[in-house]
Length: 79
Image (cartoon, rainbow, N blue to C red; front, side, top):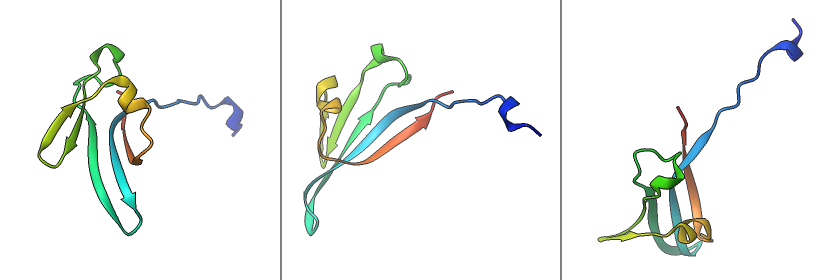
């Protein structure tokens, strides 16, 4: 079978959450940045929120994109 003739499907993913870590390797603090949108693939539905212990803080696009504390990125397969 010639594998060059097989149609290749490229999956698309949307970033739906980020776990941030602030501190050192011996201690620190974690917060979650979550995309609350029902349609994360639609840039017009930008609805990111930071969950930090007991606080829920709305975020701007720049705050999500310029994140230097990202520790874990969570993606969802686009349907």
